[in-house]
Image (cartoon, rainbow, N blue to C red):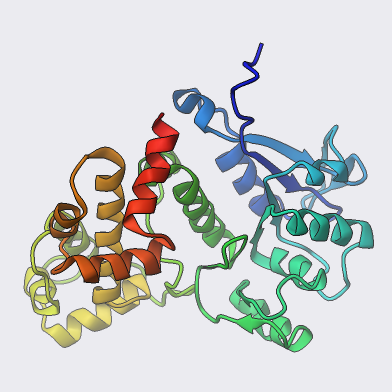
Length: 324
């Protein structure tokens, strides 16, 4: 029996539809639907909502579920894992169910072309959003009121998160987990997926060259080194010297390998370090800032709010409540 004083677990509902893209759907099921007993009551409840009780997926197999669109009225988070007919609006019953869920405060998460469903529902007008780079021009053409963010992995508007391609769906999902349960839990899930725990949402969708070995040390090796040195003053010259490259060469190869700049990457890594310290230690804010590599508490608070969308104090209070 469940104690009546025990709060209900966060319910995530993934939408299954005719013509379902199985890879994106599988990402939702793998990340949010897998039972994780080590997290106990922290983890999510997961359902699949199938408007017609069964749906034919790309690849010739079908998915069935005992849950229909009425599950969206109970969901805390709704995932739309891609959408095949992006020009043609989805059935009105689906759009109405998503609008109603959004109106009562449910969080919406789309993978790849799933953003078109939210756009057809009118929920992205005046909002920032992204989708797979191949479909960005069409999203702009069909929905000119949306502020399209080009070449990013995902965009978080608070209660609507839109992710780019398939691998970006993993990044956006880990981002959601990090917001809900903290960086420690998100890192555990990332390890189980054998994927990097932190890829900045503003990172480029398409990286022209993978991180690979170069003369001297690889960019990946330099990133590993710098994560151990976050409390130290690090400059581009430090990065380049550690890599055995000139600054110009290092900057070019860093951009090729990561899709961002060293300073943006470093700032975000320092905030992630701060999150871990706030979750797991009683250090005061000044010490957290110093151990994370920020020169001043004011700079730390500004960076933390921009990346975590909350203050360090509120972040710690939130995860103290979870632990309790």
